[in-house]
Image 1 (tube, helix red, strand yellow):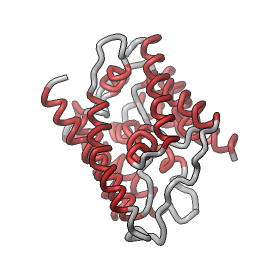
Image 2 (spheres, one colour):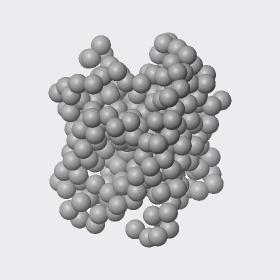
Image 3 (tube, rainbow over the protein chains, first blue to last red):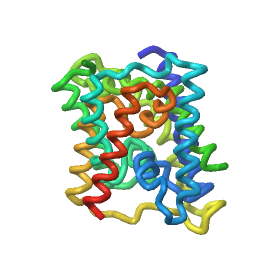
Image 4 (cartoon, each protein chain N blue to C red):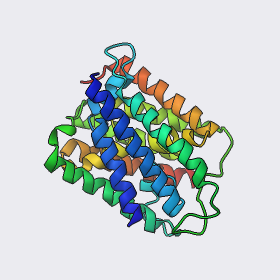
Length: 137
Length: 132
């Protein structure tokens, strides 16, 4: 890791913390991506936050692809493995009520014990997985 | 509008910090190999900004565009929480994608990301049916 990537990590992280604050202050919502995506179309009064939030994520990704294509690294695993990983991420974040953002950033920022336990758990199983199969194919 | 701004700033943060590069994420989890601490600094930066601000926002009785703060009500540590987080970690370690970077990377329209996100949405739908 270089000084540049360290500074970018801190700057990018700060923006994520700012975005989570905007979501809470504006709409009273947690900027947890898995839950926001999972309930994106639920008709419970939260759709007005979730749908524009999710669409903005994708739109910035499309814009970033045009302006800074090198920001998007190549997939590290074959497509069938990615399909399996996608199912695990979808099932796991739904059962565990959150992912890196909802638990790792928002929950830990609130001092939530559930989020601390969830974050430690997915970091440990993630590290075990990479130890077993390697960091890339 | 505010929701879209929040999503856009969130996505910008992920792109700037390098989290839309799955190889950088698996390198963070590669603690027994060539460990890359970038992700730890991203989380630290996010928490350093959000933790103090969340305390200020919670003093309000309501957010600006809603009548109440929708904070999680669960407090127990059930098996479901740990099992779910454990499964998520395996998928995260396999792919280098968690839901945020995967959705942002959907903007590249690359086939591997499309497949990952489709499978993730399928997994979410499956689990929602199971726990309903």
